Image 1 (cartoon, rainbow, N blue to C red):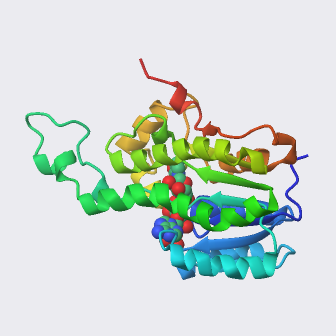
Image 2 (cartoon, helix red, strand yellow):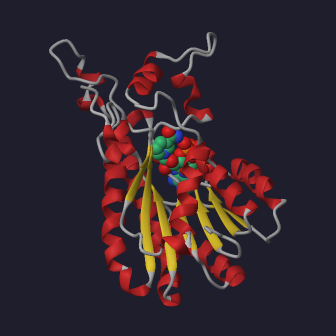
Length: 275
Ligand SMILES: NC(=O)c1ccc[n+]([C@@H]2O[C@H](COP(=O)([O-])OP(=O)(O)OC[C@H]3O[C@@H](n4cnc5c(N)ncnc54)[C@H](OP(=O)(O)O)[C@@H]3O)[C@@H](O)[C@H]2O)c1
């Protein structure tokens, strides 16, 4: 069950922590991968991790917001792969400039720490990255799937899509947009045998956010880390591996009746209102 052997799979954001973990798991299980990442050095590291596993994999340094570059990559992939079975959109993330420093605007809050202090360019970039950063690859790589009359698309959303994360309005709005689009597209592509789903991870411990969640010296949770764990009924942070089982489940032929959903993988975070 749940075999990915022989599938041709494109992964964006493959140079990141979650994207790399997903890529390794798929490669280990016999898939042939095209990895996309923005930073060539990080992409090379991810590529090295999968190159020991059988197939002739591909790697492309490419910005997911650059549609022209994506079309060029698509030509290369089509030449080598001939068909594409799966697209996993992992590229995304939050930015500091699009976040508010304070959770609430009160009479005491400096305006610069509130929504009114947020840089609109950063706000726009962050929503674009987390929405168009998945829409663009779907538009470019999905056409072949539509012509093949078969395909499978998985977007990485966030629980911020279900309930906005405090201080992260642009990130949450971008992820809400991609979850919403996942449903729309699943309906639109249902007659050409393409399934479209999303995963909404909870707080996953990665090298990038470790310093926000754990105090470097004491190794104890920071104030924010503790708040997150306290709001997670399972009382822990997730790991990139927690996302992988859901990827295999959504890609499986055995899951052919599943389309148009966003699956929370969050230790119960989105089910808990904390009252
Ligand atoms: N970690 C969490 O707790 C968590 C929770 C919920 C959802 N997520 C989502 O999961 C996904 C992966 O996150 P992560 O934790 O693995 O973070 P990460 O290590 O920072 O990975 C982000 C990936 O996105 C790529 N990327 C960013 N902007 C890009 C652009 N304009 N063009 C192409 N690629 C771009 C990065 O490429 P470079 O590194 O090469 O620049 C990297 O490969 C993101 O969509 C994130 O929002 C994460």
